[in-house]
Image (cartoon, rainbow, N blue to C red; front, side, top):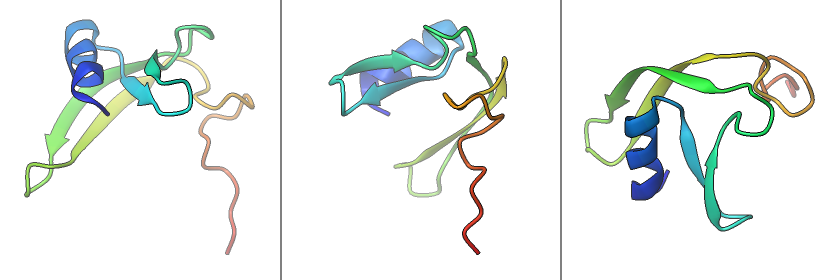
Length: 74
């Protein structure tokens, strides 16, 4: 997450990322309506990592799955 993405996340309450592929800010749900609404934010002990707990409004994966992490490998 870039500084700009963090600022937008703080302002809107919707999780926003920096897309390296598209080279632009991307708010999860802006096209699907399946936003990630910020519930809590934690910062790592070294102050260089954040963890955002969010409430999903609908499936969060573009495949329609609840999460993108549904493929078990082991």
